[in-house]
Amino acid sequence: MKFKKGDEVLVSCGKDKGKTGKIEKVFSKTQKVLVAGVNMYKRHRKAQGQRMPGGIIDITKPLPWANVAVLCPNCKKPTRIGFKITNSKKVRICKKCKKEIA
Image (cartoon, rainbow, N blue to C red; front, side, top):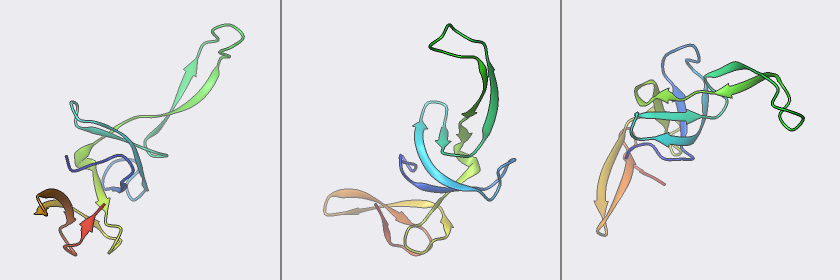
């Protein structure tokens, strides 16, 4: 899998184009990622007793994989992810600077 939790990503299209954030969760079956602080929506919640008060809350919705690009920690540019086998381990590499991404 090319995206992992904790990766810094740049949103490449949509209403939040140009924003960056860290991946909080990856949904591999639906091919979406949840990015902190991006794709925020308002939700009107009805009160559920005293423990769950009503009001307007902000929720983050997942984005499709195609709409985000990983920011390389070495060259600080949005890039695609490649794979290379070193020491019998498969590691992710940046396609622009060819360095390993942790």
